[in-house]
Image (cartoon, rainbow, N blue to C red):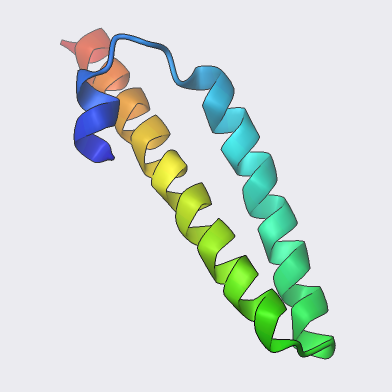
Length: 72
């Protein structure tokens, strides 16, 4: 996903906000899951976490590329 973030021409700025809000929701879901233990919920939270961090990786690598171009 880092390679995708570096090579894509499409701006991922709006996706970054979406994934950041998803990260906050994921943290809240993990806190609730800590007190209410369910095996299925744990798997769902893990899968959603993988997608969120994959998107954040692409967004952050594109942002870092833009910062490098701006300072050069």
